[in-house]
Length: 174
Length: 131
Picture 1 (cartoon, rainbow over the protein chains, first blue to last red):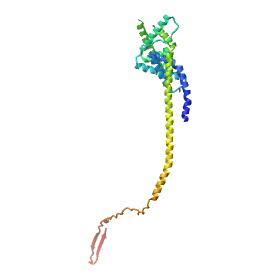
Picture 2 (picture 1 turned 60 degrees about the horizontal axis):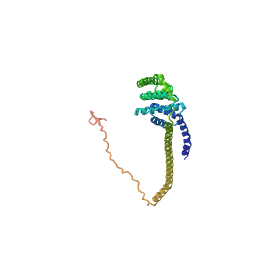
Picture 3 (picture 1 turned 180 degrees about the vertical axis):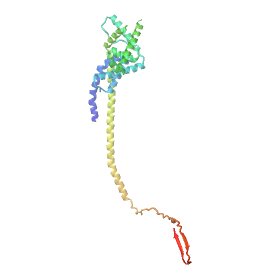
Picture 4 (picture 1 turned 90 degrees about the horizontal axis):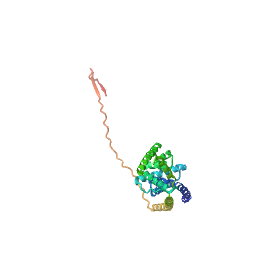
């Protein structure tokens, strides 16, 4: 009976901390998942799965940075698994809007759409490296840690990916 | 489009907001799934506690039953034993003794050697006897 009472006392505190982590990280995880997978429905599922794994794992991390790396790693791995199983869809609608002139904004949106389509054609690991390094702005060693590879591998993946993206975009624009 | 332009676009993408409905959906579904998981966990604990309680009760009742039944059974057995007629004391059984006749060992044959020496006197004869 004492054990049950103890669980009732602990559970709300743990849930509050978990909720705080979800609120702090949900946008980041969704954005990464969307950039790797190319559609919001899959990105939402991946973000959910990542948070559920965190819930099962518990919040026993030495600091925020380790927790962040762990979440990034889980999300990226889930995205890679999913993109190996399913082909990227053609959704790739752009998010948000900027205060540019309507024409410039349309042009920019179109460029981004094309860039996302080109990104979707890259191999999953290269795509993840580009998203983490170029879109999320993480340092190369951190990207390497998240992807479970070396700095040199990440650098070569990014450089290869950039060459491919340039090639695909020039073809499409021509 | 050159590499710098591509990087500019990527940087812009970083600043873009995620659709609010997607965020809300993720938050709601995560909350629902964790609540469900929590409920299962709680149900598991409750079941475990109930099982432990049941086991303790069973153990306790088993001890009580044993305490109540064992002396009664022992007393009944003792009473039954006392009520039985006494049996005549039996002679202790001994194993039959079989006497085995041993053959006398043959004595080793002793050869005696005797030498008869006749002297000049016919009444005197010398016997040399040896084993």
